[in-house]
Length: 193
Image 1 (cartoon, rainbow, N blue to C red):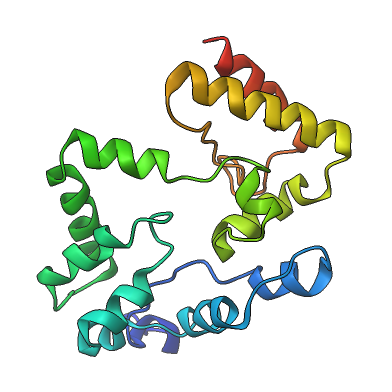
Image 2: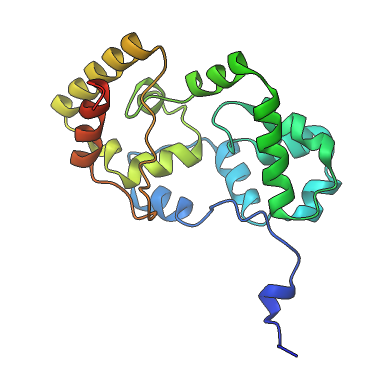
């Protein structure tokens, strides 16, 4: 028989991406996160399926907060499928809630997403996940000219499409997109290319 490593036989983890949170927060003094947000993020690093399954509905909803940007209703509704048998079961339950929610709720989810380098970043109300992503992409270190350009692009995109420009700034391989690639993509999408 194949011998399993201790990690492979350990209790299943949700594997919400905690890596880099502390690094980004420690190395970037322009990022300020309130203690409650940081405490929640750090608690998520050790979140297990067992803890999620055993938590009260309120606690479990808080544990899933941030999985869908500013839309805790998705996690709250998925909790009706507990106990989760695996990470795949949890993900499936979340997706099923979103699929069943209907078009208006799905549009609401998209509209709840923060603008890139927008008002939420400047007022420091982004989730820790978005703060980390935008920081890694260099969007927290924009010049005044770049911020003005991004604000113009955000407003134009919102006016044209009725929802914010959304881009996985982590990139396809998770290594992050450069600020220039993000701005080029923003311009291209605004003009339907």
